[in-house]
Image 1 (cartoon, helix red, strand yellow):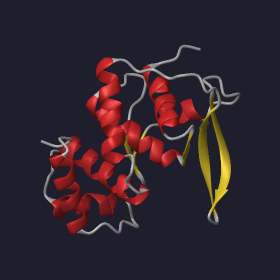
Image 2 (cartoon, rainbow, N blue to C red; image 1 turned 45 degrees about the horizontal axis):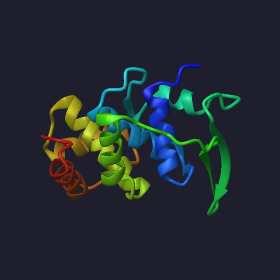
Image 3 (cartoon, rainbow, N blue to C red; image 1 turned 180 degrees about the vertical axis):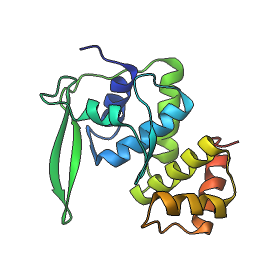
Length: 171
């Protein structure tokens, strides 16, 4: 199997996170922001209940037999069960030039965020970049339609927009 940039990025992220990451949602959101800065032709994101989601990415990380040296297993953490994605082979993972800079930037900007904030920021980014809408009240109405259990306030959305603008993800 050919190792695409997306697979290399997943392996790089796993390596930077000690060889594993807890939850597909976190990986989906990080790759979403990378794709927003450096288009990855083998995946496409659409808006899902938990924010931007790529079926292609999910299929890559959930392949049977771990063909890329990436393992996905159900694990129990703090009374919940999540998919833990692990790097099987511990070989060095290299990204080149601009792609490495983009991935490192996204990991710096979003890698330390809790999953709720990461979901919120990626959802706001997706809506803003696909619709051109920057009014927090209108974005909240869109989120309310997409996510029946949406608990983001207008103030949360305003903070997300400010953060994304400050970091250069929204113009």
